Length: 273
Image 1 (tube, rainbow, N blue to C red):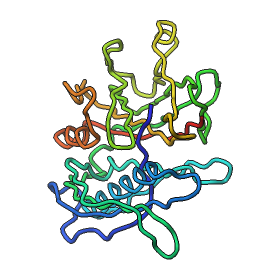
Image 2 (spheres, rainbow, N blue to C red):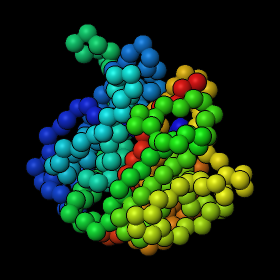
Image 3 (cartoon, rainbow, N blue to C red):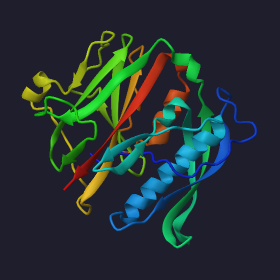
Image 4 (spheres, rainbow, N blue to C red):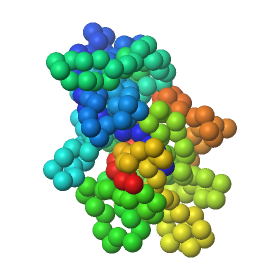
């Protein structure tokens, strides 16, 4: 799996009419990512795009998106942000991107035009995801700073407040979405409130259903994210879309749902070859 990360970076002031909970707004936002010794051009481009997406949500909602840093060996691996909780990008256009030098540092800069639907953070008080972690299947505890080796088998552990249906997605660095759950082999059933949900569980693994992480063939490491959307009712996200679904497609579907009917979280980790 090669998924998506959101990184903290450039903060653009909110638009004058950017009130949370309002209708969709068209905004232009810019994101940046530095090019270092361990950063490929493709990684920098993905980071700058995600930074621009975060900035677009901030500008439309008027709320600063806060990230949770994943730290390993005293270094920030990535800043994972659940932008879904502040706003949804329902349409996106890349205006420009490329490398430039700023104050002696080489940076990749992406500029996008995004249609954003700000969300009301007070709309989902009765449901929430209490805990969401990813770990190796042979580990008895989930690491606080998850770093995996290529081809490691992983599992996802989730505990939520409320009887909720779990929808799990992986997202590539260019915004392509793959639905992991539900799938043709695993049906969606509501998980009782505060009961731990493990995917895949031992029964699925014994039947041959396993999740393994892989770094891209041309990279020595990859930063990855899993998105969990928990819904009150069974929901068929991205029907008919298997290979060409995008993050904007998923956000667009969420934007048409009652905000009180779903909640979300993201889980970030690194894969090393």
